[in-house]
Amino acid sequence: MLGIGDQPLGIDDIVRVARDHERVELTASALAKLAASRAVVDQVVQSEKPVYGINTGFGEFTRVHIPQADRERLQRNLVLSHCTGVGERLPEDVVRAMMLLRVNSLSFGYSGIRPQVVQALVDILNADIYPVVPCKGSVGASGDLAPLAHLAAVILGDGFVVVDGREVPAAPVLDAVGIKPVSLAAKEGLALINGTQVMCAIAALVCYDARRLMKVADIAAALSLEALRGTRAAFDPRIAAIRPHQGQMTTSVNVLKLTEDSQIMASHKNCDKVQDAYSLRCVSQVHGASKDALRRTLEAVDVEVNSVTDNPIVMPDTGEIISGGNFHGQPIALVMDYLKVAIAELGDISERRINRLLDGHLSSLPAFLTANPGVNSGLMILQYTAASLVSENKVLCHPASCDSIPTSAEQEDHVSMGTIAARQAREILENVTYVLAAELLAAAQGIDYLAPLQAGTGTAAVHQRIRALVPHLDNDRTLSPDIATIREAVIDGSIIRAAEDSTEVLGV
Image 1 (cartoon, one colour):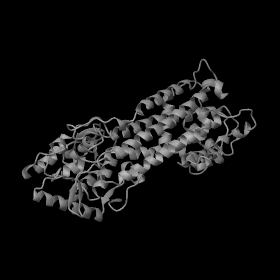
Image 2 (tube, rainbow, N blue to C red):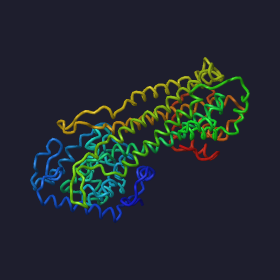
Image 3 (cartoon, helix red, strand yellow):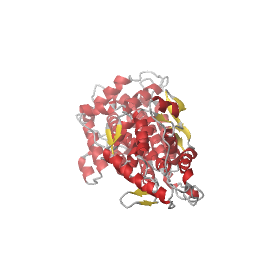
Image 4 (cartoon, rainbow, N blue to C red):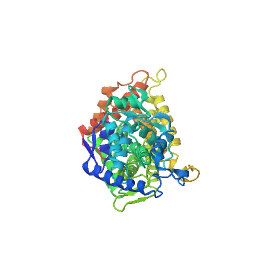
């Protein structure tokens, strides 16, 4: 059981709740903070002092005073009117992460929302109810308004949830598990939809998956280095020491671990080749820079996960309610644009290694890694697929954060597009996962042709794992299932486990 309200949430906490369905609970201190901030809002409600979101309209309608009798309807209308999302629904792990992060942000007690409303979110999360949240419609300022509104609508007994793959009305599902819909009081609708939790949920999960991908990229590069009979010299720790970027040093160590005691490497130690192509020789510099980018992204995401991104902010210690801009997603938008490029670069350099493996003039291996060329095309089209994916990533790498469009009649005249950046990062990561799977297939095929020489301690274990899943390509066959199988081994961690069980834990 994960307690919310006492300790900061980490990326691993989010993944356990989002993907492993760990239960959560509000701690006593969180409940006390929620009650204290709600008391401030209740005082304002009685005073009739104009305060945004409590007794005024929203956005362009901030000057419209809302009578006492209409304020509950105001909050419900706010939620329902903002349910304008379009496109495919967000995956369940993203929606669960959204709910967790929304609960966490509200639990700090600066949003003026009643404890029972936050508890309703907790109950829905713990009941494994999957709200339907369309993936498109947020501009990433004033918070992730549209997607968070779809989430909030479920608390009201409105909206839709997913049951057995179908989208059904939420109310009967809530009733079946004994969760009563909530009637919103002053400010509560605004507190539920104003925040960066959608972009932040996607960002957190992408960062978690990117850590895994960074390791797989090093494994694939090491396997290709073996298959192409490259040299370990470029990974000499003394080279990294005089340009001491952490990511470069980590990558060099990883490649050396993986290729240790390689018979293949030893077999060409005294060859006349002076140096390798950049896609091999510069692995530690390129992969390392991506690792450094991930580290900086994680720093920003960690702060955002444990922040209050509502507006206005309720200050329980002074009784003030202050309008600000914590809902603006620029901190996440910028780092996710940065991470997009960092992940895409892993795919770019991987595709170049695939090309070298398949080009017999560059690899000294059979052309397209087939022993019977002409009748067989071998792995020729594997590179086409990789090229297509890395080209698509170049389009997705366009920075979303610099593309602002004003909303709400110019009241909200600069927005972050952070949710778009996060979604694009997720898509790029998926594409690169396929590219690395393709490289692992090609490199394993190349290693086959170097038998009986054995690869290094780590690379040999990975080669064996690949061959346990996918046989050597003797004659042409449909390759999509092979790619999908290795992709799954990347995602489930078995490629990494094969490497680490034979050596030691790889760094990121």
